[in-house]
Length: 247
Image 1: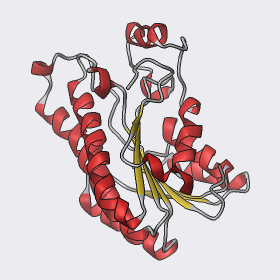
Image 2: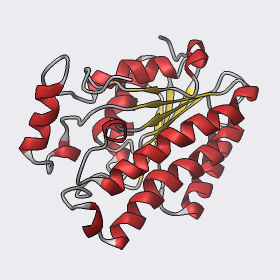
Image 3: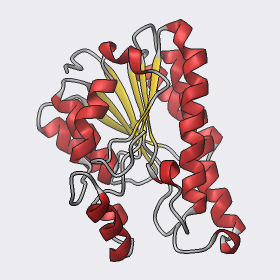
């Protein structure tokens, strides 16, 4: 699963899932452009460079269309062409725990503007930099496949990402660009420390392969989907969740 000679953009790369995916893509040989609103992304890029990989960090706010445009202009100037995009950036922390009728309007709008609109705008901005053979991976969630309760803002956003993946596949396919959604279960990392233990236990006890799931568990799948051989999977949603949800 070599990504040698391929340039990959990863959003939400400053920590957690994004940082793990960055490490996996770098190990596979990709040159990386890491994007995040958190400045810790500088450290992730520096660590990868210290290990001999090509990586740089560019700050971006997925809730701000102008920031996304400026990011795309920067990538066009420095890299010119990209071969892969991982739409991983999302708002997840503290979005759960309330019944659907109790959700704050501001929280709803924030989640949708980052998770849904941000994914759409980033894909729109990056896809013109891709030629035939380009690959896009959207990080969704299996919460949208089984209807996780008391998490509606997040579930709705990830369901929208799955739907957008399918629609975009129809438009990108004639250009030989593939786009696929990966839907993990809840992952054990710093971004999910706030999640109640009972919710973690629900997943960990209910998986066909019991136990916790980590970001490393989805990395190999994502790397494969960025390769040229993955085009046949375009438009699909892959529940990479150790068998919690089957499709």
